[in-house]
Image (cartoon, rainbow, N blue to C red; front, side, top):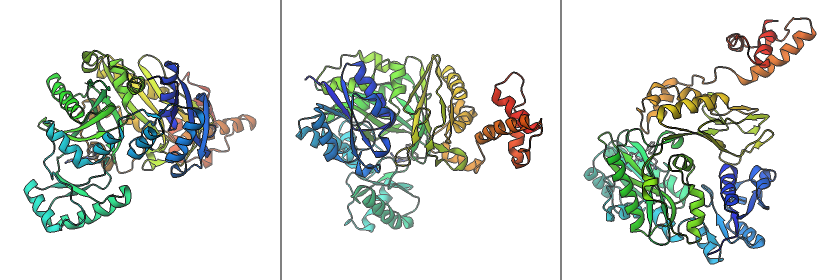
Length: 518
Ligand code: MV4
């Protein structure tokens, strides 16, 4: 099949990433955009751009009708959904197919099947892949509590109540004793009903402090399914991944062979096509259990690209146009070095990771050996309040894990974002944590670590101090050396500024010192 023009039904860094792949392949691109994104990077980067509505996602990036109208109007013959938004919406995949437009992703049927966590579990079991012990059938609203308590006793406490239509931690409850089960079921059902329009739940035994390991797959329309070296995604905050790396520091080559074989078996058994990811939990004894399947390209796909040398987005497009997946299996299964990704968010780590939208007044993106930055922001970019506040993914590659960590630390030092707060200070701190360096972590590690820190700050210097200090330095100059702004600066700002008393630094450091010292 010949594809000439691709519409990207997304925004931000993933839209930019897909446009880059299209350009590499000589394909024309169509961007779509909401009101607040009219001047965004993905819009200026694409060959054409079409407005699809107001800023709230429900009125633009989630509007199947408007996106299909844009595809028809521009003559696009395929749509790449990116991640989030409509990427795992079976109705969207079906609507594209019905309109004669290639959906760059799995079939609507595969999305539907994997969207049901109990159906996915059954598929894994049928493929001979271990699943966490739990209920095989979904528990609809008419199943009485007494029966569910009985099932929980058989499974063994603690159990997890999960939403059948869920994933990513939404509508999930941990229950330690039978007495607490009925209220947890009620809560999980109502949360699931509100979030997914389906209040069906199921139970699983709760694993203690598991690691989250996932396997990237590519599958073509000729029966070839290839698995990639696993990714370690245990460092999460409230079910949001924060740092990902590959290979997992704890997975042996033998374990890797078992994990990747299991992942490919699940995909093959359901006739899965395009890119996807099989998630596993790894317990403290080193046993792994199937968790769920993500039927989209994932945020963290670049770390896999760095150690395998394959372009996953390019392969999504090549598979969609019917090409054979002619990559040597070994290339995907043997790690070439080590890669780590930090998700740089417009949020304030010193204020409980609250979103920090606004204008980026200046931006310096790191580069140099082993560094890749997948982003979309520029100096002057307004980070909107309406969407996920991800501004870039900073990826470091090294010949081994220590080198990847060293390069990540170096890149974090080079990274400078002014005007808004970002999670960069958090990463500066995290990359120096002994438990991160020794890779002794699990899925509850970060939330526990943050709880212990009890809101202690990450930023060793308030960025506004630099600006205030620069102004103070100018005033001090004009007034003949008396820094009149000194009294308005907080004690901690003065300490921070004084501690930067190092010779031969930038004009900013000198301004800071002169301004504060008067
Ligand atoms: C679990 C679990 C322990 N036992 N299931 C959270 C997100 C959703 N995809 C599944 N999740 C979990 N399921 C059982 N039976 C622990 C988690 C979990 C988790 C999983 C992956 C990454 C981070 C996590 C953080 C807390 C809990």
